Length: 138
Image 1 (tube, rainbow, N blue to C red):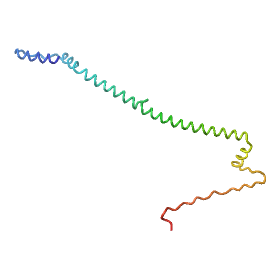
Image 2: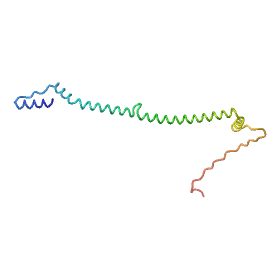
Image 3: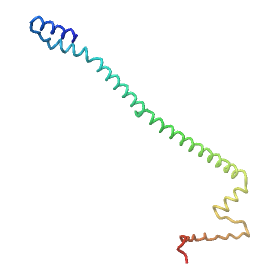
Image 4: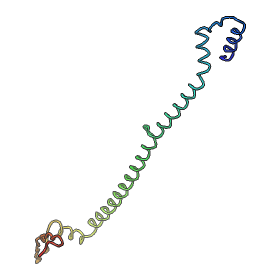
């Protein structure tokens, strides 16, 4: 379109006529015809970058997914540890319910019970001595 206008202007000048400038609406229409493709490309690239950013660091993006995966692993470890402790406590409970010796052992350790003619001797814990740093001793 622009080439036609330029050519028409040159022909008019060669014939000695005065070139009439195109109206504003025609110039605007010509500009829109030339500018829509680059503008659409910019919009498409911007939209693609926005979607990429959202997929990486959005509400449910890759970063959040990795954090959730790490949290899931830690919780599974905690659950396994708690299940093992639960099984150990069940076994202890079964022993205490079925074995008088286990009950006697717990009574002696925790309640400080004694059988007749037994003497309980309670020892004081040893005091911890601080070691001198190397090279400062005499």
